[in-house]
Length: 339
Image (cartoon, rainbow, N blue to C red; front, top):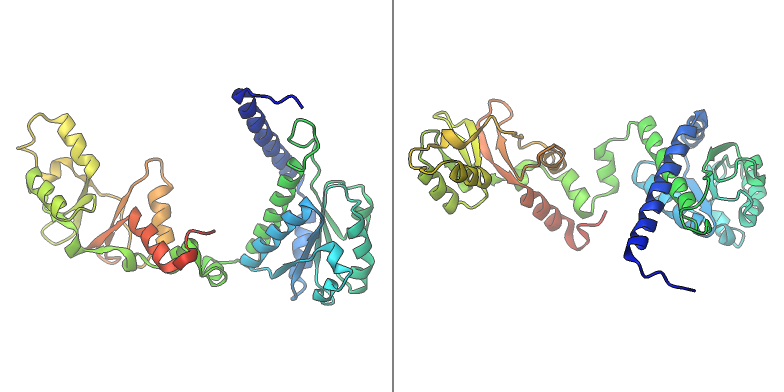
């Protein structure tokens, strides 16, 4: 071997691999047809579990697909094809659908399983890299996972093929979610631990800072008064309230910096001059996940979110991005942060 020492070549190879895999997934998406719908119908028609099986790298992908299905409303188990014929086939109840993964469509361990599964009246769904293979002939439904080439320079390593297989498994899981109208509440029941579970379970009102913990000023208060209030309550923002206690605007640390850059003399400035009128707000009954999306899924991300009463807009408190992450970690326990 003659090692390549040019870092630019390493980077080019990595980018080329990702671009090739992306094109392979896009091509597989274009090939999707009513066969996917038939696979969904076969799975929905059976109340038992779904089995996923594959050998080698396909087996590793199969384990992830089975885990994805379990967390999205379809009970699934990974069945190792070699172990299946040595007793593990007992996990398959009569009529359990089976998803078989293979790039070649000629994997001997899978072909050996077919008659045993047929004896159990198992519907067979193949995610196969060769739609004209021996295994494809045995399937009730075939999802085409073929690729033009793998992503490595030698066209040897399972890269594009495993990426497409995983994408088709995800597509099948998402289609099943749609067919079942699977809700976020149902997802939480299957995923109560970790940060995502906490964000689905906890509400804004449980993580926010109450009004008496927040810097609150009036529209006519001086900028000096605003700075003092934000120093006493260092949450990164001051909420501007009108005489009725309704939110009139929001002043962030960034607003203060921009005011100092724009004005040589800030002594004449009041809160109303530098605040953002009509800021983005949220109600206390919303999930933390909703708040996180509201703060992050926008052209310009925000780090603080005023909380107002859902009925009349009365100011209740302030939620920071940091509060969402902190609540997720505390609620999720040692495993928090895992997805």
